[in-house]
Length: 244
Image 1 (tube, rainbow, N blue to C red):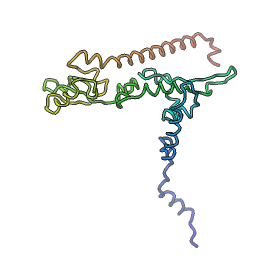
Image 2: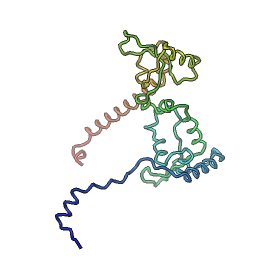
Image 3: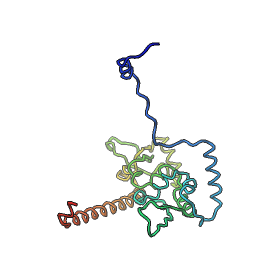
C-alpha cells in the first residue's frame, strides 16, 4: 500500500481548491406544503374577531412576513416617515421585568389596519410609503416634453406616467407614440428638483416628499440636541466620576 509523506500532504493541501463556505442568512425558500399550511392559517385567522390577540408567530403568518421582519416593522425609527399606519402592538411589562425583551402580542384588528394601509398598486407607491429611501433610490417613469438643444440635458416634466387617475393619461401615451412627448425614468428626488410645465402638478408631486424631509429634519435636530445635552452633562461631571 502506498503511503503519503508529510511533504506530499502539504503539497496536496497547498494545491487543493478550498471548500465553499456554507451560505448564511438570506431568504429561506419555503416548500409548497409550508406555503399552503400558512395560507390555511391566514384563512382561519381572517374569520376571527378584531379583538382576537395573536402571538408574534401567528401575526407574522397573517401579514406574510417572518418574525424578524415583523420586529423591523414595529421599529418607530425606521417607520416614522412612512405614509402607512404604524404597526401597533400589545406589550405587557411586569413590574420586576429586566430589559426590553418582553413578550409582544398583536390585536387582529391592528394587523388588518396595517395590512390595508400598506396595500398598494405599484412598487413606486410602496416606495412612497417607505419615506426617504424610496425618494432617493427608486426610479419611476415620467412624461416629459421632447428634448430641445437649448435644454442642455435638463428635462421639463409634464406628469407621472404611472398615474392612471390622470384624465389625460391614455392620451399622453398616444403623444409619446407620435413624438409629442417622451418618457424619462427619474428618482422622485430628481423629479421634484426638475422643471415642470405645470406648477400645480409640481406642487402636488412634491408635497409628500417635503413632508418626509420635514420629519427627517425634526429627527436630526432632536438628535443633535440630545448629543449637545449629553456633552454638557459629561463636562459638568466631576473629574473622578469621568475617569470611572
